[in-house]
Length: 169
Length: 169
DNA sequence: TATTGATTGACAGTATACTGTCAATTCGTC
DNA sequence: GACGAATTGACAGTATACTGTCAATCAATA
Image (tube, rainbow over all chains, first blue to last red; front, side, top):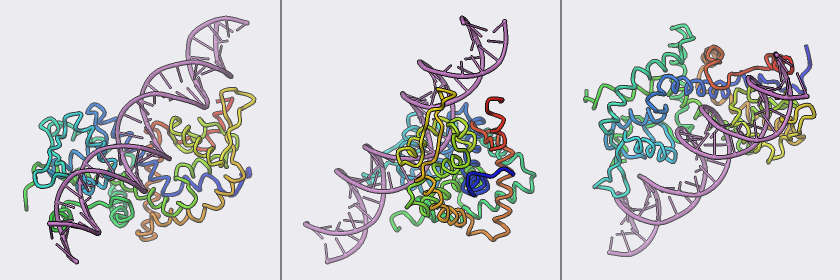
């Protein structure tokens, strides 16, 4: 067996969760773009559109909590969605700081149109695994993401939690 | 049960592999930075250093294959590592286009020093799961990444494959 | 009511990631 | 040896993600 320059081999990278997560994310984005490319939407833009449809009139800060998305990044994402006429920003009457987000008709139509492509993409990501293994992987990953939720800069604050973050929160 | 503005709910995002992969990657990077912050290395810079240590005199194109890393992005990563004096670039005598990569002594020392922090980070990412579940998740993810390898722009070409990519390949 | 503290969106700066292009160079082939 | 194809590193452009800062605004309270 040929000796290595040191005891640290590439296994110090390849077999580690951090590397596998990065690599899987790379692959997932690649598949999404392949399947949904004709709609000119990135995975993040898609998530934002879905969240705005579910919460019409949401503001950027709350949106960032709903999709676990950095507030700073979200600004440019919304700008791009606005430039493509999928989203409208209207000033709030109650709070002059806030801009409320709404889907345009075109945005809602796009969302309906893209769903089959998104479904294909999601299916392709797991396609190489046996059905039982897909279920297992998703279950474990859901658990792990949920249990690690507080770690990242922008923890997910799902819909239910948001109801308490209004005037009262 | 209150009705939603449409049939598309946030489950169209939360429960899907693409979202979970993005979220997990977010969390993993966050943990890595927390544990290894004092060494001023990102996960990608760490992977590059390990690969260069394992392949002294590798060029940027081969390095990109060893860590499944876009060639365009890699340029700036190497620049930063060079600016921090962890890596040296030397012109090749055989091929004037190529710049060969080597760890500096400081770079090698840094790599030894950071290992415990990296191990802590990797452990923390999976910590919320039971040991058996950690094993299962890593096994499934390794499989999936491997089986999807050809999908992304820069498929992983591990060390063995590289030996055939030299003059003969 | 005046002040303090928190929130909101905007911005600057850094670091991945990707697409695409380009010139210099090398290689395969004739 | 010349010529077309491939490789290499560099660059421009776009899109996440993060840190941090700032002014405008709002809320809480002294």
